[in-house]
Length: 179
Ligand SMILES: [Ca+2]
Ligand SMILES: [Ca+2]
Image 1 (tube, rainbow, N blue to C red):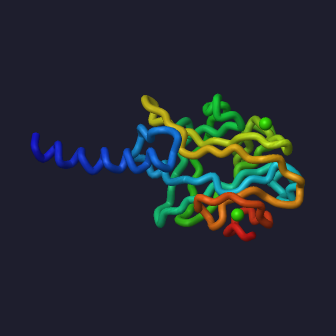
Image 2 (cartoon, rainbow, N blue to C red):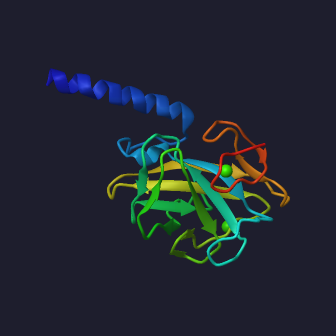
C-alpha cells in the first residue's frame, strides 16, 4: 500500500501543474493526446489547397513530443464552439509524426479521406476551436482557443510552435510557424 501511495503522488503533482496552464483538469492524463496543441488558424483568405482543390479554412495541430501520436477514431473530437466540444467526431485513425503537424480542413465536408474535413467552417469575424479527447469513460478538452477576427492576410498562431504566445503570422500550413 505504501508503494502505491508513493506512485500516486507524482501523478497528482503533474495534475496540479497542468491546472496552471489549462482551464480544464486533464482527467485522461495518461494519453499522449494531452500534449497536442492547436498551433495555427486561418479563417479567411486561405491559400492552402486541400484535396478537393478548395482553399477553405484550416487549423494546424502540432505534436510537440518526440513520439508519434495516434488520434484514434471515436476518441477525438473537434469543435468551433467550446461549449459543445463533441461537435465533430473523428471517424478514422490519424497519426501525427514526432514534432509534426496535422491540418484539419474546416470546410463542412464532414469526412476523413486523405485529409480531415469537419462538419463546420470557421467564421472570419472570430470564433473558437477545440480538441477534445475521451477514453470512453472520461473526457477532457485537450486544447482550446478563441481567435479574433481575421482580415485574410495573416494566420493566427503560436509563436514559436506550441508556445504560449499567439500572434499574427505568415500562413505556414504543415510547416513551422513564422512571423
Ligand atoms: Ca463556425
Ligand atoms: Ca504552421
